[in-house]
Image (cartoon, rainbow, N blue to C red; front, top):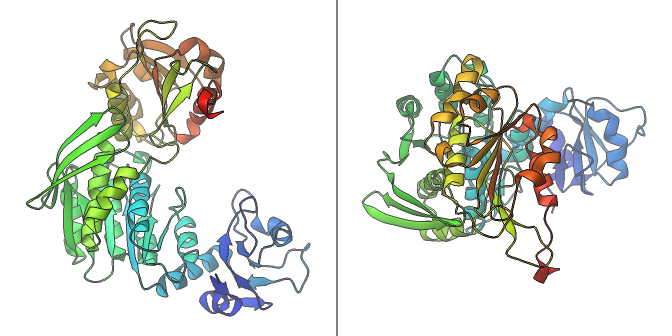
Length: 476
């Protein structure tokens, strides 16, 4: 399918097209580039112009550049613009302008990627759906998502993130959503904001891009919900609230039952009962927000509930898996909760609640009693209260139910020092230092959580635990 012709791309960007090419996709990375993609030579750690020849050699239809690289033929298929990032943004705006379906924008301190994936699962069962890949939610990720959007898209789900003030509104204005959802407002990126109210103001700015007569979906449980609601009213949007205190979608109960979460809620005056195939009260809240979006777009709620029942968390964001530790005896397993992609106090508390609720298995390992074990890494970008926020994890009810907690990083030392001796595992400077100790720490019957900010590389621990396992014997 043709996504962009040379003429269309040139008109969208104001650039100069060389050759009469057509592109079926858009790529910023030669490692994942597919034949027929338009390669965008962004400048980041490396200058994308250094990879144009390689991209063309791998079958790229053309390259979006601001200059012709020395190792590329003068008549190579190119789209030459003044600035590559600006060109990508212009292409994204043009992609959005020609789309006639419905657009949803999602932001929030916690849960935006999981909620985006829920919405993708829901709408994919109801029409041609396009969504952000992974966490492509920044100044290049949003326009890239829009530039990749097929012409016949019926539903688009655009994730929008931020690290500093002033980032969300321009991206929302580019996406022009019909519905904008704020999953929650929590202590994240506090280094760039004075307090949580400042974070709420920035999150609420997503409503500035919503089309006229659009809808704001917001979490009624957060302490800054009044800021969100006031911004929605200021933007002349109808608002739909969700949460335990939600008027439109009210969460009554979220019961963790083994591998599932059973959710009881109300949609207005009507009862709403559904099941998620993953444990977590936070997933229940995200799902309720997703259903509010479905209602806002007048899509099929009954179909959406079925889609949510089949949804699974994205890798590194609460994914649960069984690790088989013996090539013959299928009883000898442990449960791994991979939440290693990111962390802040709210998501850390939610992950610990899940770990505390997952049942262990006794009498199958070296240690007769199965244990709940956590590897917790530093939570970054929390500002001057970072040490206190890490120490505060010690006082959570869920923390008291964890058998053994290993802490990683200088900030997590604050939690480690407050743990009772019976719960205190070991403290490490880095995740790499944990790896030689894993087999000594873990045993059959255990349930293990790994969570921390991405820079703490808890993914190394997750990968090492996976490598301890074998294929299930009857599946080899």
